[in-house]
Image 1 (cartoon, rainbow, N blue to C red):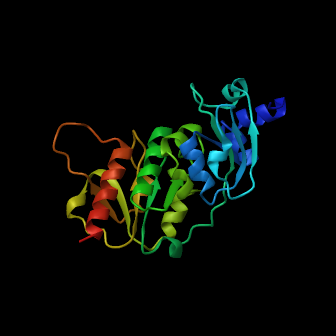
Image 2 (tube, rainbow, N blue to C red):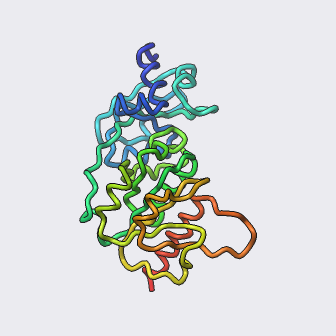
Length: 249
């Protein structure tokens, strides 16, 4: 049984301010918890109901595991229908970004994305295409938001998500910076080379003017039909796919 203080802590980290204060976030569900157990992340505690057998986790490290009631699970879960397993995980501190860290690979840059589902899907997409770094503006939705963690389906455990002042960082970068816009060059005719940053903008407003000024090459996914725009997560997947396709030529 959880104490009132434990419940209070576990409920509080559903909110960004308290996640920052405590340096902790929650991961829910067997598949996602397993991904984090097998990652570089530090697991602070695991909670499960009586219907879950913790022996199936096959832990190689010592982690505090506690059985809790279904009632307590419902109190701390962000899900309407909670699963039987929740992990309390420490938020990592990533190294300060520099030009050398980003060379000879592609990384994603997200300017003021607000939808947790979009960020979670982009993290999952990055994982699929082997992209290890996502660089976010300071006002982009928090990667440890419960909805982002859920949508990433465990891929967050393998992706470094950095929050920075984009104007400062991009001004210091010497590798190519590509920006996804509606009137750029056709991605299928673009030579992306072997390294670069791919900037994706806000769901409604696109890339901010001050960030556009730091972009070397504007690119677009050619439109055939009449839709006004593409969902930012879908657009990210298409661009990543094209970069990946060209790398196999």
